[in-house]
Length: 445
Image 1 (tube, rainbow, N blue to C red):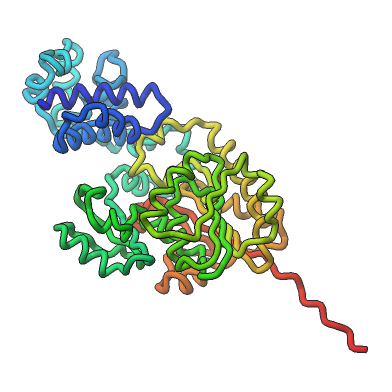
Image 2 (cartoon, helix red, strand yellow):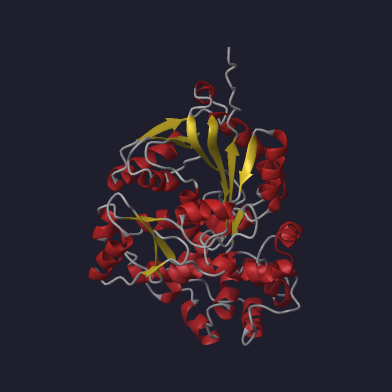
């Protein structure tokens, strides 16, 4: 494909992403499946153009409003601005690619030409921009994020606007980290140990993961280091009865099975039977044989009532705003709506109220989100503890020492991982333990 054809494809896909509700990576993947002629360099270029726009959309829109003389902030004009400001294309580069030839964008109109000329030599970001524009997030989220980060807001948002590395988790059912690193080295892949997770390897380059022997044989799984740590902190041990209550496609389920050394009983629950079904191949490849998949009609399914007080560990990776994953899913920020925070917080509270019934005395409820908002994290835990006097917060540093075995980065009783400080996706973890009933001493007769 020519550079112009790559740009035209990116504009088409950006328009589809803007109009639809599907995640950008799904839309892009479907496009490449339909267009097999696009080689790896084409796929890389098209994806690069798309994510340059999605990551910097607020700043691009600010520049279009400032210099565009009434041009709409649509896919075509955002692409023009991104090529100049984010990808350093020259006016000549744009003229050669936007010539209206077959499969290439139409030539620039007068206003578009003036926009390009005005943007040449400008920096993408200006100190005078509003905070939400500099940070490239919806303006209505500003007060929430400011409460979460205060003076570190710009630093954290800038980190979330970078491209994430590929994190891999070593499957301890198949081998250890050194064996996995050597296996990757044999296939000319450089991987470095992750700084926090003892199971993680980080790869900075783009790799054909599905073709690698270490992946096909189940030695490695894709999992962000923060997610690896959340699963480790569940402290699922061999022989336990464990529930992954919001299992999705099974990333944490796989990690829990490995922690349990395939001994015990592990139930993967989700309200989407389709998501659970998609985990089948991953479970088989990983050799995770203790997993029972349990579709639920809702988080208050009758299955929960039938298994009250039956489990040692209940992991709740709750639905959330997903702000911590914006490095990987920058389009998600633009799909959020102001009412989502309140609605998701209510849903999280309801899920916790149901899931806690499964925890036996002495067992633990592990609450996890990939959000960075206090409303979904610390405040949610405080509310839960206020309503469930038989649960207490287990200090995260203690659990970290028992499971990870190093000094904890947590500053309080709960764990908040952020991209700027820990170089992971944003994650929150709280460990809640149900009290054992007091022992009743037998009266001597």
